[in-house]
Length: 146
Image 1 (cartoon, helix red, strand yellow):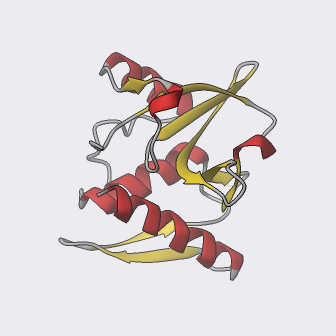
Image 2 (spheres, rainbow, N blue to C red; image 1 turned 45 degrees about the vertical axis):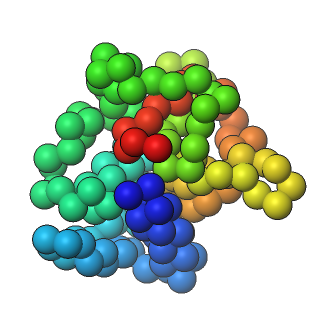
């Protein structure tokens, strides 16, 4: 399951680089489209990726609750928080700057040992170094078992 999450993020980032508006993902039960530009926000992208990877009907993921702040609260309430040192690719990481909140999928480390994240940033899906964000990591969460 974790591998499928990472594949969908990789495919989304590649499709966004090519200027595509949507990524069509064939799931076990259905075909779905993941928005890659304009109408997408960070939480919406996370929900779309997890629902596609888990084979859920859109809107049925337990943590599909709105903006990133609401998603983080629900994950914390559900006991999904993990220590940063236990993070694994496919886990969620939340960021804060003042009252702003952002969520991304942890993609693992690059060749130099830096942490990479996959996310929708200002409507564009990309994979980039975690340090490129002007936010600080506020919490790590595991939704899919290791």
